[in-house]
Amino acid sequence: MRLPLATLLLTVAVASTLVVRAHAEPDTAAAMAVRIAGAVDAPSSMTNEQLRATCSNELELVTYTIRGEQHQATCVPLALLVAKARPKLPEGRNHPDLAFVVAVRARDGYTAAFSFGELDGKLGDAKVYVALDFDGKPLSHKHAPAELIVTSDKKGSRGVRAIETIEVIDLTAKERAERTR
Image (cartoon, rainbow, N blue to C red; front, side, top):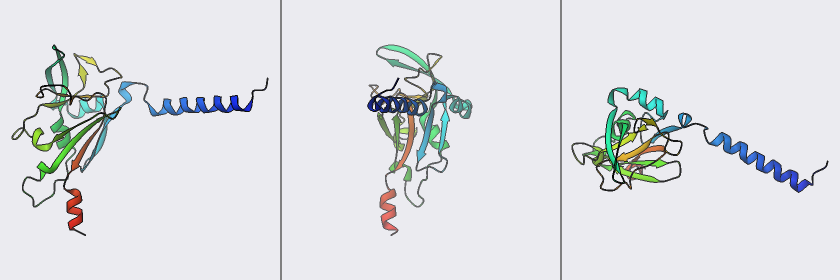
């Protein structure tokens, strides 16, 4: 049986797309990782289990409300993960950390941002956590490898499901680079 060339090409194209997709998206939530990057000395990429192991002494059981219902999650404070990545704070400036922002981005592109001042318990005291489970159960594929919860916000708009990247951004980097030219 001979297939027309167009049918054969279409079949190959569809099969290729499926193979690429299968390799681009991990099959299990356990294989997904959170990448910590940007203006840091120690960038990393960690799965849910690696986050749990790396921060085992700092894990907190956090209670929060979604649509009027109470839930609990085992969490790592976002500020702790950022500190472990060692932000590249410029020397010789008063409060250089206040010119830094943390952007938390989901697989679908949804992003929430926080200033270092908000995350610093001595200044803004925002309660921002990276949740590793939901009511004692592993996160679903839709929410894995971790999700962001902000218990101090009045609304859940800055909550981020399926965290892909935590990026530390130095808002003064461009200005400093221009001065050194």
